[in-house]
Amino acid sequence: MGTKNNPGPYDCWNNAAPDEPRFALLGRDPHAHQAVRKWAFDRISAITRGEKPETDMLMVREAQECARQMEEYSINRQSLQPRRAAAPEEREYWDGKCRLDEWAIKYLPRDTGMIPRHPWLIPPLDEWAIVGMNHYHQHGARHLFVAMIHQDDGRCIQVEGPDTADLWAELRNKAMPSYC
Image (tube, rainbow, N blue to C red; front, side):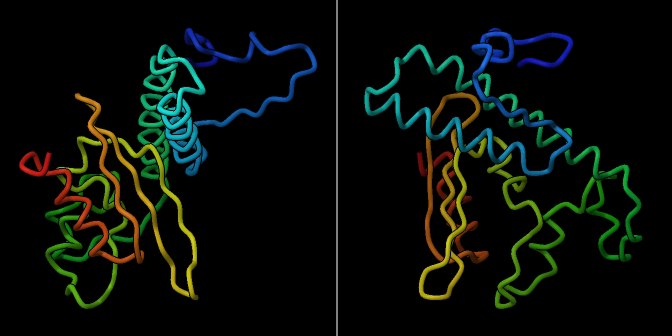
């Protein structure tokens, strides 16, 4: 994983042609990790189709690690911002950075249609990395596509459908060891 002071092996900044366009994403941008994960997902697809060499998987893994660190950096940076005090029933689920989603699962009725703030942090999804996520509208309804890869063994899972809490529950079920 590269930084300004310590460029990684796949750092493109110095490898770019003198007139080649480039764009930098920083960890402080709360959306940067999603863009990097989308790139990684697209590169995996190109490798699968034979359009890119399998050796690019090393670059994909670096990008996925970079996305994970960017997301963590962004969350930690947000935790430094002033926030409202936690309600008494929330305090047991407060980790100092963000409201943990177990609180939402425990206290939100299923029929509210509300989705936890960071559903990908709820076990077992916390062992998976998002490699693709896309919101779109179909017939006026918000839909979501999510693809994740297991951080240890590279297994992939995905779901697509209406953007509801049920979609995330389906993804959590697919992430269970017994599913794979």
